[in-house]
Length: 146
Image (tube, helix red, strand yellow):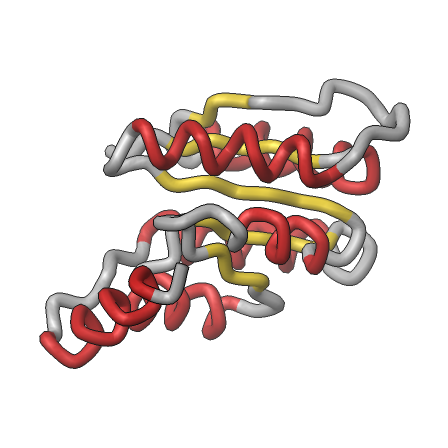
């Protein structure tokens, strides 16, 4: 199974803790990169931590959580080789992994119910990138943009 890194800022802390407990029960192994409390922190610092780990460990994927997921997705996508997808339902999670080979899931703790976030994460972690040449070709073009 893939190595899964997870991190959040203070706005996503409670959802991160919830997801870790539930996803571990489903058999996933998660490595928590912080934050470890509700105290205010800066989300770009955690996006950078996840990006660094994923770029070093090629078959790993990540989950980033902040209030809306927007700040984390913008920050993570600044790193070449990171394809962070802000997902708001199971379908976008499936397509992000399958069509775009997204390697980071971004979630918004203030805009999603916990159960919905769990469903989205579960789909994202189980889905695989498409082997279709058209999708591979497009992902290569994305990676050339940086």
